[in-house]
Length: 70
Image (tube, rainbow, N blue to C red):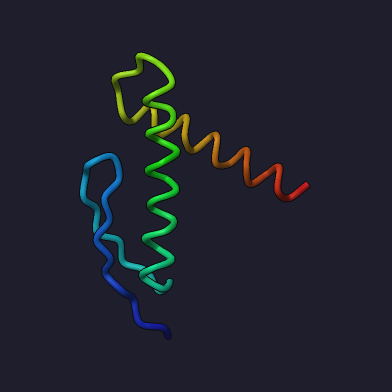
């Protein structure tokens, strides 16, 4: 069993601690990608609610995943 690392992350100015077996730097890179995706949604329009921006960002990221699988 691999050791889990506790990694502190900032996403949209909120701090999260994630426990993962993944390399901490990789986890930070993933979090940065998510942060950028959410910020793109927030800057694209007058949306105020960050949870809605997170859902739209998740849809965009999932679309990227599906397209890369084609």
